[in-house]
Image (cartoon, rainbow, N blue to C red; front, side, top):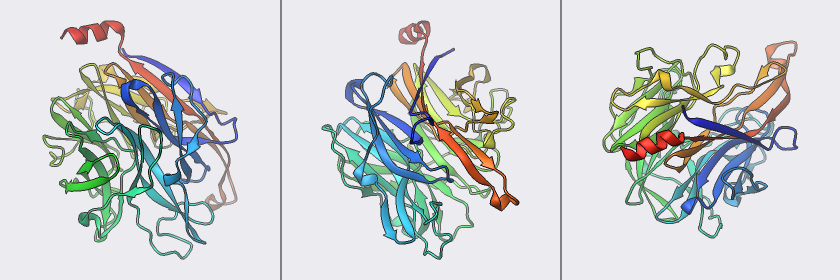
Length: 394
């Protein structure tokens, strides 16, 4: 079994509740960079993107400070543009941190307002980013663009994992909603050039589609043993996996299953990848015996080893990474998490367990969140010494 230790930061007892924590490792593991956002307790409504730094392997973190390029902008008196679902990545060739997410729009009541309500025109969601150089300075905001997405209602890079290729180029997974679609998102990957100052999309990969629910959402990518693996969120009760030899053209996606063939219930929550030693792991939430009252079964977060030949999970290897917690018998929700390697045998998993109490009104429309809190939680996962020794000897 892998060794797991957890640490809590910025708990709900303080004045600000944080959400969406994600960590990147700088050169030689000298410093960790965390992006995160405040949370208002209303739907998917977040404050400006902030940045915190750790110089002791995530045992402590600096006070989060705003990233100016990813601040809120007032579009008009009714609409504010924010940035959400940001994930940071270290790019070795340019020694920069790339913070990549997408814009989002909020109405006067603080609610998510992407083209709906309050008599506003539709505003497109597009991928945006900011770059932190080796001296710690943040760039202006950048936006991804490509003619393929010109007529898309939305196209989003959200809560993702990207791959840095040996030549410095990027493979970026995303999902998009064409104007002519039936409301179902498709997913694909982009091949992009990155020079430390700008992302330039070169190639748009083949679409991955589904007609169930909202289609395919929040894809995450990894390169393992000369093959690319993509895990996909969907809303038909399953999570999905597909593979590719070039990172752009994909095999038909199949539901995640145990090695016994039993299908896992992974409804509408993201999954992410990690390598430890010479093995591939998936991190995910699923329906289990003790989480029947958890919305979307969004806690705990599990991990299991992937069989890269059968594209399934090895059930005997499953472990809880971030546990299900409760307060006043109400569960904390997980799911908007991120994973990153510190070394080939050590990794960090970050999330913000969020708790809220709903006060019932006369009708369901009158229900409201009367209390809420969150905490930033980081789990360190590492190979036991004997497993590390064995993997090095192979």
